[in-house]
Each structure stands twice: as C-alpha cells, then as structure tokens.
Image (cartoon, rainbow, N blue to C red; front, side, top):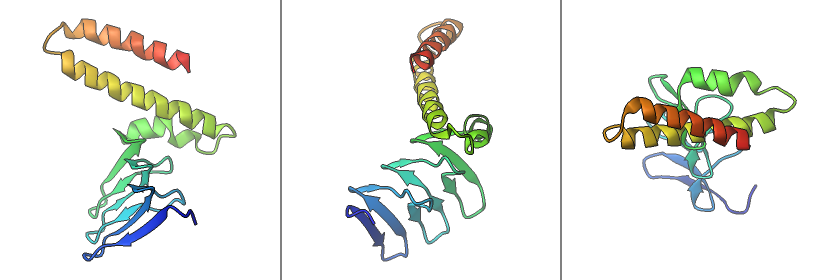
Length: 137
C-alpha cells in the first residue's frame, strides 16, 4: 500500500480513501462510500473512472466523470467504453480524456460569452479551437 494512502472512517460511517490529502483510489474501488449508499470514484482529487460510472447513487442513478468533467452515458460509451480493451487503450484513453477536458472548457467559454456576441459566431470559433487543440496532441 502507498505510504501516503490513508483510510478514514467517519463517525457517521462514511469510508474515504485519501492519498496526499485528496480523495484518491486506484485499485478499482470507490474512493468514498457514504452511509446512504452513494459510491464515488476519485483519482487525484477529481471524480473519475474509465471503468464505468464515477458516481452510483443509492437509487441506482449513475454519473460518468473523466478527470473531474461530467459526461453523458452516450459520450462515455462513444469515447471510452468501446476502447477499454484495445491494445493501445492507455494512449487512446489519454487522448479521449484530453478531448473531454477541451470540450468542457469550450462549453464554459460558450456560456460566458453567449450574451455578448452572436452565438453562431462563437460556435464556429469554438469548433475551430477544438479541432486545433485536438490536432496538437
């Protein structure tokens, strides 16, 4: 076990795994399990799981997160799920995670400037930036 790894069990029954002071677990299990039944997977302090949902709620609802960015189940299936067993999965998953982060940033920019400038113009610029960013990898 990693010497920085700490396992905490709170008075209310919450179990949490920390590494270097942030929620983190890399053995496939959830980094935090709450008494309500909520399970959350974290990697270096950010919700994250390549192997399925990063959040499973007590009612069975699931959320998919990659390096702190929430994505839909469809995005997960398209970008991650079908490539987990590829021989070059590590390379592909790194690129997919970067693509997700770029798209999340572009969504933020779009929201920030959508009231100021023409939305169609912003959308065109963001698409060009996304293409440029992805090709730089």
